[in-house]
Amino acid sequence: MSNTQQGKMGITSIALFTLCAVLVVDTLTASASIGVSVIGWWVLMLFLFVIPYGLITSELSTAYPGEGGIYDWVKSAFNFKWAVRTTWFYWINVGLWMPAVYIMFAGMFAELFMPELSLFGQIAICICLTWLTVWICNVSADIGVWVTNAGAILKIIVIGTLGGGGFIYAARHGVANEFTFNAMLPRLDSAVAFLPAIVFNLMGFELVATMTKEMKDVRDMPKAVFLSIGITAFLYIFGTVGILMALPVESIGLVAGLIDTFKTLFGEGPLGTAMVYLFGVFALLTLIGNMVSWTMGASRAAAEAAQEGELPAPVAKVSERGSPVGANNITGIVSTVVIISYGLFAQGNDDLFWSIFAFSSCIFLLPYLFMFPAYLKLRVIDGERERPFKVPGGMGAQWVMSIVCFLVILQAVILFIFPEALDLTVADWSYTGPVLIGVIATILIGEWILHGALKRKQQLHEASV
Image 1 (tube, one colour):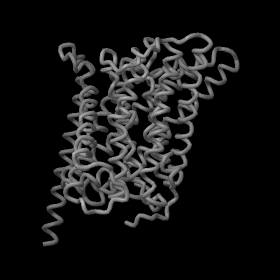
Image 2 (cartoon, rainbow, N blue to C red; image 1 turned 90 degrees about the horizontal axis):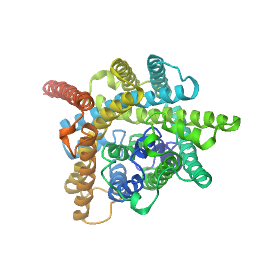
Image 3 (tube, one colour; image 1 turned 120 degrees about the vertical axis):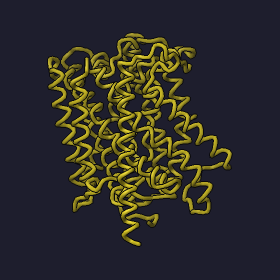
Image 4 (cartoon, helix red, strand yellow; image 1 turned 135 degrees about the vertical axis):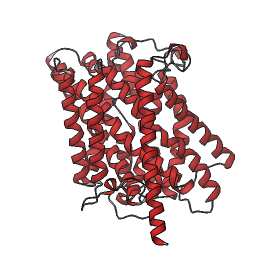
């Protein structure tokens, strides 16, 4: 594939797509639940993890352009088996994560417009939104890119308003939490349960690598990635501080926290109520944009893998317009099944949201445990390849960056499953059990799919001989 593309996505579009994928409003309240020390955690993670991750992503996506993205990189570095595992986790997590995002949508919708809406009513909303997302992704990439661009702009508006409004509120009424230098330093006491949410919030800068056919020039990737990293880091910190300026940390709800913050910021008068509705609707629309961007990217990678015989044949189905309708439709089916299953067991909206979110996030993070070793191996075995962008420093620096990134991902997976990892004697198995079972079941299904892929590969080889 040549570096120069005839596609429509320039630096701004790439950055907006990446922003829409990475910048998530739905877990902002989870990071704010850590308390004021979250500011120290954001800054630490930015320098320790996000910058190395952005550099590595920029090198891989320009040196190995293709619609497979992370799947292509793992396949080039390792073998067929690890590529199949990677693409399975990367794709199926979207169907597992979509329920969590739309459960938050339904909870926020109920908080705004229908406070008496039952859990089953909220589940019906989730299912409708799932299939709206699938439809948008099936229609065409042009509409999908338009939706994700709009979603990115709305996220900037919502998070910017949370941050700015928090400072204005604090100037008038005083701050809801203590913002001293000591309080802002990273500490583990309150952060352990929600620390993985920070890592999750910062993932996805490589997703746009699956859209290379839509780009004008893949060499724009590093500029776009670092533009979106800068904006993302600022907005996350700004928005989180805004929430903590307005709400005491103990009263921040995972699902209703955003709407509660808007109510506090805008007040209860007619104008304030109208503003709460307006920004509440903006926040709801960002959730749809988020799922469209991830479904588009992950389904394209899955369809490419299926066309190579590495995922079941139905996943490979592509429409006349080039949309991966097979992968999109299966994502919708998986999401619907998860929504209904979890709805039968959930005690409440926050429990339902966090359980599904933690489960899907573990699956989402697994491919990154393969990506960073793949980067190192490609530097060793394919060092002569032209790299339009190359991470600065010698191999020692590449080893350090890759190992640190790998360990950050690994601790996030462990803490999603065992939030009390520092003290396993108090493990909450009513939470940990279902999440752990879900992760193991997803891995086993992946191994079954891998077995089928190996069988198909062997049959093709025997037929060619």
